[in-house]
Figure 1 (cartoon, rainbow, N blue to C red):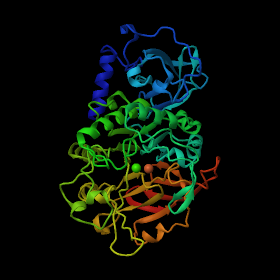
Figure 2: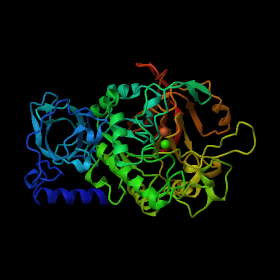
Figure 3: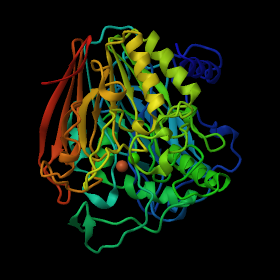
Figure 4: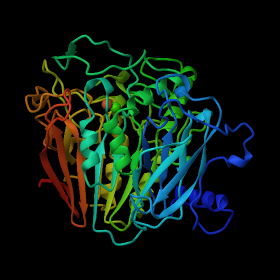
Length: 533
Ligand code: FE
Ligand code: CA
């Protein structure tokens, strides 16, 4: 049992009055203690407009989420500024004939009338259905699923890795397709929202091609808590996104655009004083918590979130979800991509911070599951990019290549301990990249492999294989597949193979783009690296 699980269990025991965990419990203030509770709540318009979600499943429970917002884009979501009771129920069947747990939670105005119910005491490795009720209205039902007990035999797991869903740049068709996949869970690598302003309806150039926003952000660049709330409300109004949330539990993380492009710990990209940026980061983190199906342990404290965490899927897979933003050193080379330099190589610089790095290394070394999955945000492959005009190879300042010493520490740890069952998933780069992860300079055999999932919409339709960027990365032998299309990676994990299907849509600027599999790559257990599947 890791620290978080132990803390969770202790908290659970306390909440259950020290007794057994047989009855599911709720981390929410008991309605009986409230003096300002709004007793009679009626809505002029439907209140559950932002859908429902479940997340952070364990062997005995998960979080269920919703937010009351009758007017999602209005201040306060159009709610009366008072705490409101919300009824919830969790059933063993889709028709809600057998109720496994039910109760009441308080939707607090301090938390944008979001509701997080953290269930425990449920049975392992089985689906559950959940829904909410308030003011005479009922939400749609969502489907959650508990994990198998740690160590229990598990032969197959399927999940989707996805993220980067710029609202203006395409339809969320990929989310609709994910909702239709038979997945056990979804891993979201971040860029759930983008912080930029409404860019107008005019046609402009994107990656050298004409682009006309499909729909628009509301308002200017976001800074305040209300700004972030409204941005989440805008995104979460999308029916395809809601369908994916309702279909399966998610493990969410965050990357840069949930706060500001390429932020790093206490610094934004604009050079704001850290004590000023801290206000923005705190607002962003609060809004992230309010809108994500995450546990109470990820509630922000002083503007910081405990996001890195672990999940165990029986004896088949351990997943280590990393946080590559909150603890990283400032970007090297002034945040600009460039030739490998002293900044990128400095042993003083860290991507994970000491505490998380130690937590990850211990978890990997002690993990007993068949596969160890590192689920994180930015590219782990060290990709050398040939500049268009020629000259020295350049590297990304924002990805692991900009934190080369931290990358080496991680890869050395995996290789030196003889761990031959580590896989990684990531995102952020708005293309599919699948390949082997080699140590610095590319010497030696692969240490692990990476499925970097393309964006849901960011980058719009994309150019497919007609991509000048391909020439600039052609020299990287570690790279086994690359394509500029929107989609997701469907991972199918078995005892002997870890398979990734690179799913692509032919277009996202019109609805119902056609889904296909661009490539399938497979890692064999005990043999790091990807083969064509
Ligand atoms: Fe992105
Ligand atoms: Ca990003």
